[in-house]
Image (tube, rainbow, N blue to C red):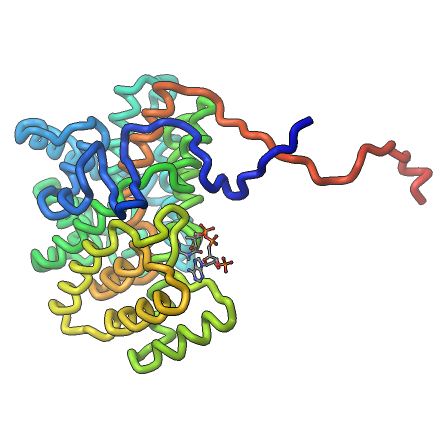
Length: 376
Ligand code: COA
């Protein structure tokens, strides 16, 4: 029998085709449906990009107006779901509450027997509309603050800030957050997206796929890294300490959060755009020190190991400067990635084959069962 080749971590394995996005590590580029993310970030709203990811084309003004009206009218969550959120322990991580809440949304769906693409796209729009409400509801609940209902006259990002803080911040803040949403929206067959595809490949439902995506994204090697980056910056504290901290981390062979990527080895295509907007946040808030620390960390890491930062490196401090609690950062990733996940679920459903890889057995050789009485 020929020797099996093991692709540990599925490194380098092409599992299927996709028309949603293309990651091009050789030229540090990423396109959604053919459009470079940098251009989408500068010229489009997150709602336009969501439409693009789902439909394959940028919307016309009329299509966008209809889409926005539809989404904005679905932001409210049921009284029962609000109660579930408000009964969650205040100490819970928001990702755990969000995972439960999306599962609850599935249980509220009265048409679960419908599995066609049109119904699943409607569910996707509904989840995109409701996830910010869920996140904001838990944010306020755990601070002992009253729930703020969504407003249908505000954009996606403006409404989110309104539900969290009770006010809409300056346009600079809105734009920086919106750019982060566009950059986080989609990224090929990453761990959480692949998880959603594996789940629905058994013909399980779209909510189950998204719940699995949230569970996968939570880990610090994936979405959880944006939180870990900010904890690291707080631990370092001052720019003057950054170089020694990094040298010690590398000497101790520690994994430094916000660096490295399975696919990009010469730099993450999304980093320059997010860095630009993180810098705008630093200018806006007058708080430069986090990015000064990052500049030193990045220079030392490049010099010592030639490893580049990933998107979580600039997004972490950007969110912190906007005034958010650190454990909210990964839920923000969900607010954006719900678009990519569901586009992949629709794609998987359209040309499904059960995802079922093989493994090479390395356990005990075949042996006989000794009955309990004789085992002593
Ligand atoms: N800090 C220190 N060393 C790192 C590193 C990091 N963040 N990322 C990679 N490396 C090193 C590895 O130790 C390994 O070194 P070695 O060859 O001397 O053993 C080498 O770079 C290759 O890394 P590898 O672990 O094979 O990469 P991977 O493709 O399996 O892992 C990540 C990719 C993203 C999981 C990894 O880079 C990581 O853990 N990064 C930190 C978490 C993070 O920021 N995640 C967000 C990703 S968008």
